[in-house]
Image (cartoon, rainbow, N blue to C red; front, side):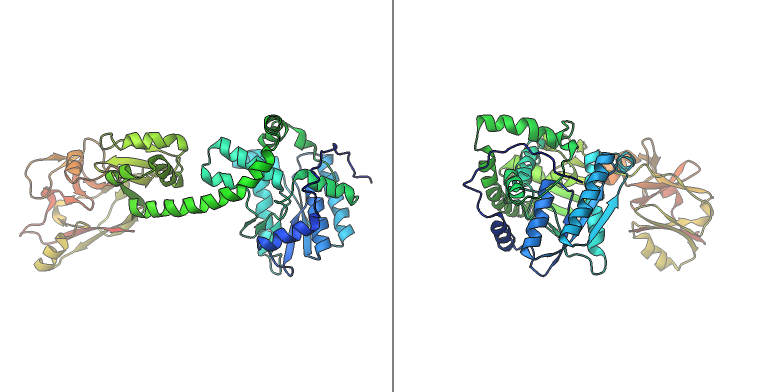
Length: 465
């Protein structure tokens, strides 16, 4: 079976066409990617890039296993690729591991694109193989310099910030890209020079994949205007990486000064943040950790001068203005249901803590001591009738705060307690016959307090997780 497909003749820059094998070994050594005794897993699709990777590893004397994924996306062509890789493994007398996935079904189930689904399936499988007993130590992919330039441009267009400018790194954990030093045309030239065969993936010619569109339309137009664009971007990638390292160190120092960790929340003093320079860059790096986009930086800066209670929101968090603070808090789970308490001895889970009900008859001194805790409410059991309702407070709720004869709306009470918006959302109450018995963890209702005539106590306790 002839797997050779014609390749468009490329203009080769012979100035950079030094011995590819020598440069391959040098790159691995200088970047400290792995050592010669490591067992490698080579991700091989059958394309020219992965075929050259196999050849270079074989000539270098590295021990490797070939891994091939059939994504079941191109019918007979996918099966052709699989057969080719099997022959390739036989040529190098290396073990081959194969996996077939129903990528379309996976993408539909996980609500992601075909490209994202294929990447997840592929790398998850590689991870599994490396965790097996006596499995390979590193996974090698055949990403090259042109791939890296495309990635940098795509990251720039997507607004990933300075972190996206370093592109694909040669080593990320156990994942290694040892061909990042080489241009695509170099790999093709090497394959032709050494009479290597490979197969072409017809999907690489389809425009509906963003990377293909970038490769076939955007970059050629850029090169028309700036012939050395690829070379110049490639030269800048390493500088971008070093700049990013310095940038991260500076940002880390700023974060340590500005952010107060009050798990699960993070508090930022507005006056301090306003003095930070450069404000937009620091603000972006703070909120990007919580799912906020670059477009929301200006919103947060405006939030600092708004009234308390205002907020902006990402898919996972909110930033709330509370007086002179910004509070970053995770979004609340769906509103908790009302918990029915039907007896005087029980425990229930409130999500943020445990609620415990028990009857007791302590000595007067002990009762006074327990009453001093905000997380314990001692009630006159004779005045309590079950069932009780344990629920989040709502607008319109009112009670008679302990020590007061007049009723007060809970909304006003929480304002007087100077609670932030995020703290107010965590407040629960105990209700009996439409009367608030206890604002949990904050104040008992005066109508249910213990007195000198109390003989039996009902103890309500909130144990925060």
